[in-house]
Image (cartoon, rainbow, N blue to C red; front, side, top):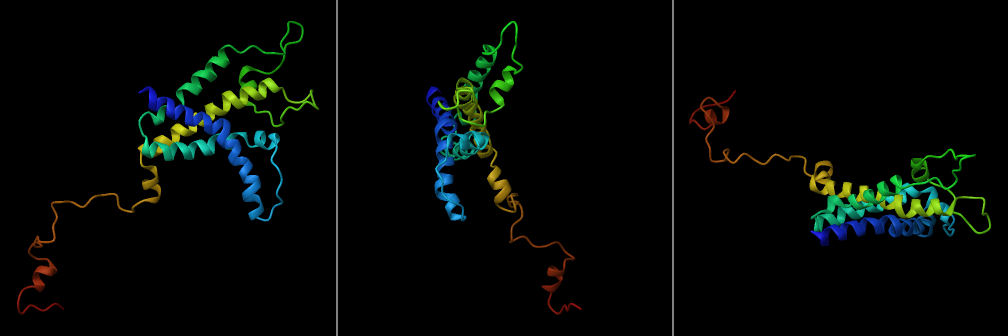
Length: 199
């Protein structure tokens, strides 16, 4: 039980922390030139401005694909990231709070209101680097774990077949066969009688 749980949890965390930002950088380098937009090197600000998409979409796809081959405990990938996030919320202390001038932000906004600019050494008055690190290494795996588990649930419930699969999901009734004769009075039965003509 530990092996599959660790595998899916690690895969979800890797999607949120590493795979999502890498795919976002490839979007700027490979996809944008194909649609006629100029190529530019992506920055940390680009990642933070697309933080939710970079965390959720790759994990959703990877969770769907991996759970088709390794379904055991794939829907539990959200548990450990959620435990880590809840622990951080419970043990959170406002870094700027003081008795004279308490800060206005709450613990939820500290984690879930994503910073949209990456802190740099040139601008020390910009985004808080500790807060950005918490969002990248705590919130991103949480989003990815939820998305990964949703992808696994989609496989378990066969949502792809329900949305894009066969038009008829009802199996044929085994009691009805082609060798059965239709009841008397049917057109087919009357047509088989010799000398009978249909109007």
